[in-house]
Image (cartoon, rainbow, N blue to C red):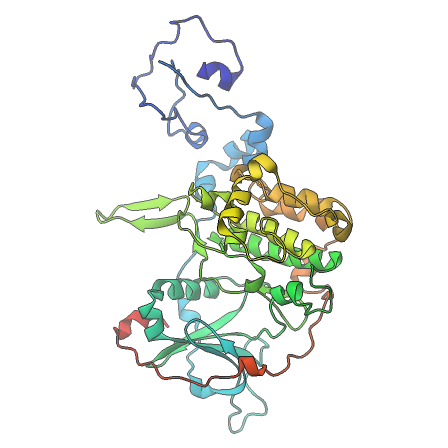
Length: 452
């Protein structure tokens, strides 16, 4: 029965399928014969199978195969090795030696920006030195955000590995739509991250607080398209470096002075595939991660079902964000209400059965049905069928009719006018007043932060 379903031919008479391969064996119940990758990469030779009881057969069409992986000829031409290596070649330590040797004494505070989980963030400029005509710049940047993280707080919350990973990834990822980290340094109590200063506010405030002057139930169609294009351009670059972002949401996207966006906060970002060294010294490569992370409203079904996730989870989250920009709410939580986790996860899990539900005015707000089509192709419950995870990767998304008006080259070069240019940021409100520096001596091993 298995042979008939897979090959489309009539099965031979009963008893005509002996297990006559050189390595004759019997598979345990509930185990598959071979994977698609093994079939094409030569790890397992073709076999003949006889079922001794009930069996489930799966098949694929040539059209479906080529949409997911490319043509068979392309696979054969480029060989197995590049296919196996794709998205896994991030040089983790490539930028370690490039950091600048600085200290807090080199900077002058301009104003307080806010507090984070482990410390405070301040806008700073270089102090003007004697004999200098002007203040120092780095790659044309004169103002910076200096983020101080208390070592003791990082250690007590078990976040040292995450902070190190975020630092490494930010140093590696150089893209106009990803937060630029210039360098890191430390003193006895804190580590410091010197990044570009982004003062235009969060994308969340644009959507939900009318920051750009638009109604609070979404942004204008042209704005939504512009913002979505920037986000997918950044995600596509990140994925070529083997990094899955895993926490795409408006709160993690900032607006710069020109009205363009930056992805920030790579605390959940991870290299996938990733390698783990076993106690035996053997290196084990994992093609997926099973860590539950991210924000509930943007989680793909594979998080909920714990079937493992990879970069394709970012395309699901991107579909949620593209929907949200126009609708003014996410697709799986009731608008204007606090999300109930049971209802939320049930709605996400039932997409395969129920599809995505759109507001009645969605196409009107989006100026046509192209965005609906894009969102439906992004919010596919099966990762292998999700737009962005097919043969052409993010190019499939960028070439979708929804982005027909986007000049991708000009967008990357920031030559397109921003749809909304924020005014020069005002001083922080009283509710965001500077609490001032606090002392928190570090009692751990100084070597824990040696790479900073």
